[in-house]
Length: 413
Image (tube, rainbow, N blue to C red; front, side, top):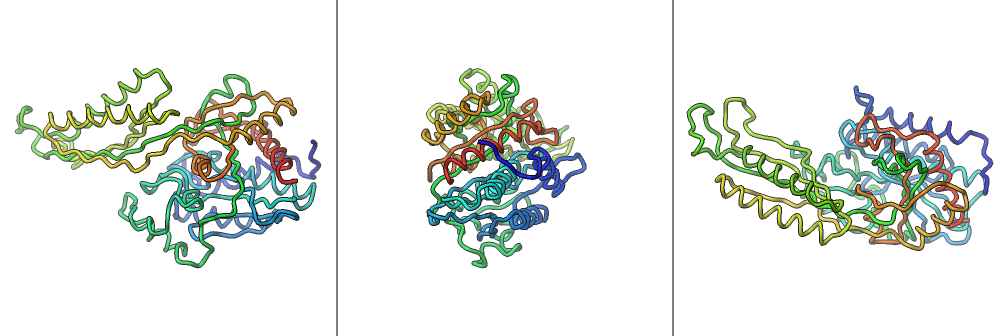
């Protein structure tokens, strides 16, 4: 199948990526668009306007997801949904999430230009949040659509400045009934195109990958409370050093993860101490723990053993321990029928590919327990992601868009 449109695909993709990457751009040439921030609102509004310019009927929902709709001529009430998320980590890249949003918009617009209205309704989506970068909650966009979250949950979650998710949402006019409810009952299936965020495709000289599974993950906040005291006058034996206890826990969990040799990964990527003064024993320490594996039993057993080790360390060092697990997601299998359809299309197109397990979490795992879901990867250069250095070659981005067009054409036309 060949698509005939006036603008070269590579040029359109590059222009769209660079255009969106300017919204929330940082001094490091990265991107920061945190949920309900000024840059986030600017990006979602720009996406909505761009959808309309591309011939889609666009709207917000009540949590800030943006949809662009092409009405089906035969099956209007069930929706083929495709897209990704618009938010980023702090000083992240311009491809993560954003490419999936733009790929969906470009693919649907080009199909409409070429073939007119589809038989089945298609909607593109810029999901409002996936990363969990501002609030201790992830997948707010897809979770609100699928019923994982309710609006009432927004009052229970805060950011680093103790602003509730509810207050941040209300400040921008969302969550108050001005827009249609986020919960949907009309989604027939979901498709997400995404950069790999790893090195496998590039190292194996492959252009594309259908995803078979998305790993499960547990994300926790560990808080230790000891006692601040003078660094020079407090004997070592009598100290209740929260940072020292935390350092033992971090060494324990990372060290044991390295010994697994089964694909399990554990990361401590955030830590804070109080009073954070050079000549005062740290009386309080908080760190974040992220553990992932594609088999839930392996993930659960590892975390159970590690948290017991944490308790033993806390007891030995005479510090109080509080553990909050704020994300506990089981691995999710993508729809095998849709995945096989994508494999067949890739073989027919002569594209070098392989099936992959995703080590990163994605909105597809939320949709995957709600409706038939498929996810596709394009390569990431050097596997770098969540960084201003994130990059994917334009040829690979174009392959992702072409494959999405082929898939949507077969499903909707």
